[in-house]
Structure formats: C-alpha cells, structure tokens
Image 1 (spheres, rainbow over the protein chains, first blue to last red):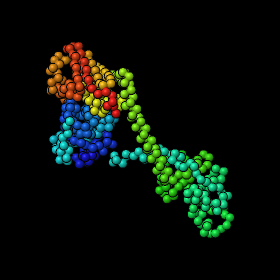
Image 2: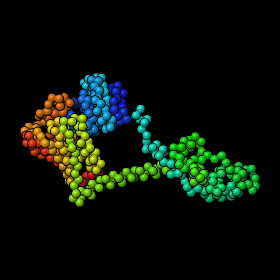
Image 3: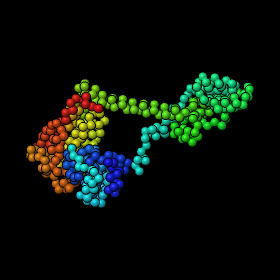
Image 4: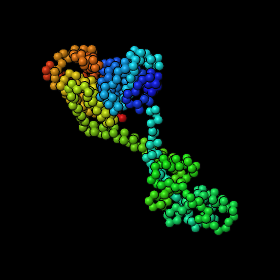
Length: 115
Length: 310
C-alpha cells in the first residue's frame, strides 16, 4: 500500500517530504526506543512513535523506513523538520494516541514487520 | 498531488534537448528554378514526399507531392518549382527545445518542419515526428549506458584499489553530548560506503553498528572518533573515546542493561540495546575499556572479498 493512501485514510498531516508519499509501505513498527527500532524494524516499515527529536530521522534513514507517524498530535521539533526534509523522510502527524493509530493501520492491512 | 510534480526522464529530455540534436541534416532540396517535371524522379529516387526549396542556402519555400499532383492535374507545361511551391513555410529554429517541435506537430498536424539556423536564416535540416522519437530513444540509451559504465567503474575501482593491497580509511569526529548532531557521522559513512559500490547489506550492517557506537559516544562521553578501514575481505570500524570508560564490560553487553540518565532515556536512547545491536549485526566486536580511561570498540565485518561489490 502506498504511503499516500494511508495519509488519506487516516487523515494524517504531512509535515515533511510530501514528494516521497508514493513509497510502498511494507509493514509497521511501533516503538519509542531508538535501539529497539534499529534492532527490529524492517526496511520499508511505517514507524509509529511519540519521539519528536531529530534522531528519529537518523534512525528512519538508517533503517530505510517508509515514514514516521507522530502520535498524540505531537509536532516535530524545528531541527527534526529540517533534517527530515533533507533526508527526504516523510513525517506525518496524527491527533490520535498510538494504540488507535496502530489499530487503524492494522485494519487497513498493514501488519507488523520485523527483521 | 505529488505525482503531478514528478517529471519523467522523457519529459526532462524533451526540454533539455534541442531540435538540431535530433533533426535530419542530410536534406534533399530543390532550387526555385528546378522544373516541376524533375520532381518526379527526385521524389521517387529519394523516396520522399516533399522537399524544401532553397536559394543560396536560404529557405524560400517547400514543395510537396501534393503540389506536384496538382501541377500534373492542371497539365501546365514548363512550370518551375518557384511558381507552385508553398512560400508560407512553417519552420523551427535549430536551437529551440524539442518540446516546441512536439507541440507544433500536435497543433499543426504537419508531418515535418524545416529547421533553420536562427542567426543566418540558412536551412540546416528537417525534423519529423520519427526524428523526435528516434532522438529521444538514442539519448535514453546513451544515458542508461553511461550510468551502467559508471556503476561498473565504481565497483571495479574499489576492487582494483583493494587488490593491490591498499586499504581505504575514513575518520569521523563525534562531538560528545550533542544530540542534535546524532547520527551525522554514521549517515556520512553510509553514503560513502554506498558510493563505493559496496553491497547494500554490508552498508546497512556497518551503518547500524556505527550509529549505535556514535550514539554511545554522544550520550556517555565528551567526544571521540570513528575510524573506518576497508580491506579486501573486511571492514573494520574503530570507535574510540577518552572516557569515562566501562566498569563491567560483561554487564554492559547484556541486553537491557543501561547506565544512561533519565533525560537520555526520555529521548528513547539508553535502552541498553546499543552494544547488543552492534554485536548482532557485526561479525566480531572487541571492547577495550577501563574506568576513567576511555573505551575502544573494534567492530569487524567480513565482506568475503571485494567481489561482492556492486
């Protein structure tokens, strides 16, 4: 499923890299621990987190993730925005808590993807 | 929509390339004083259905098969081309982008345009829809080929360098306590390794280990260096800092063990997985450390020779 379709259905606000929404989302991963994401998230996953500092971009880029969904309406920090733009990593914002976002994703057929 | 903004390679080329890059230069022309009766052999011999009329290298008109048939039908004797040709000729300039030619073909429904040099007004060629398609295909093929050659060279370059026993070394400085620059060195390293044409899996493994090590240096120390060495059969990442050192290395290697302060944990670091992750994605991890002195990680990745490059 294309990231753009998910953005549309979940009504996510696109904060960065709106040119990279044609990426194919291959699965999902949810965690707020960087090392956990590094260890377990699979390439092409959509990452659900509440962390908003710029290291999320470094991790997403490192693991070649499809994008980052920030939950609870949390907005990325200024540095995060810049870095995500330059690394072309889409950051999407949802007003819902993680549990609800993940539930909706799961219903759409996005399964948990791990290495 | 994002999709609308994407331009295809062909679209890009249509703007980049000029009419004179794809036109046919070797044009059969006739002169204004050429007798109409001559056209029969010109058209038949050259298998064309029209020809530009040129006087002193200047384009003065165009004569088509249709003009010739009209002339035959009227049964006029001894006419010359000048009296039957179309003088209101649609032309393109050689320096116009190809996209102009494409839109003119679409607007006019004509099959060909004469191409004129803008400065001198001289006829320099003829362009047909077929020329546009052939020119684009040629260019796409050349670009594709160049990219392949480039890729091949990049991977061969690395092989050649390593084959003569040379090693490649890179070094990155890591600033301690600066979270804003977290992952910068490992990102740069990743790009470099990618550019060298190393296998994507190797690149990913090295980048992950370098990232974890870099974050450790940032979280726990005043700074350090990441030194990377590429040999024929292995990549070695050497991460050194000047303190505070690890009191119990065995414990530090256990998943979940962490001495990170709370504020670091709040950022999602310090989960006690760093060294564990490094060990998991590498082929060997050696740790030298003493409290108060500093820590040195030597992380090894076996690449099975540079032949895996590409």
